[in-house]
Image: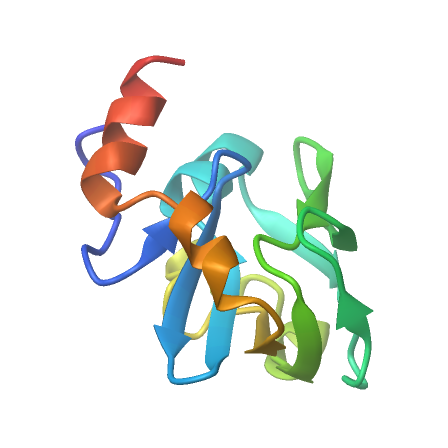
Length: 131
């Protein structure tokens, strides 16, 4: 686990999503740990057109790898502003770096108080060690 990347400027969930908050918007993706557990990503289904309203901890898509299929869970509630369109044709971008080119959604936050339930990178690493 020591070789996995978990940037300190992000927030994390127990369902292995990461969040980057910028003003009233958040960018969401899966963590390096989640990608490592899934293996090579080969398919992803997201709300591609935007405009969808997500509830906190609501399923927003599916991700498929050579090993498994997993549901994607919204770490925060809000309206989908955009989805990473490049992932439609190149879901493998998540394999290389889930934090940069592998981001999934941008949402406009509905409830900033939900940010308090997210973990720091240090807390997330402690959480992973306890699994």
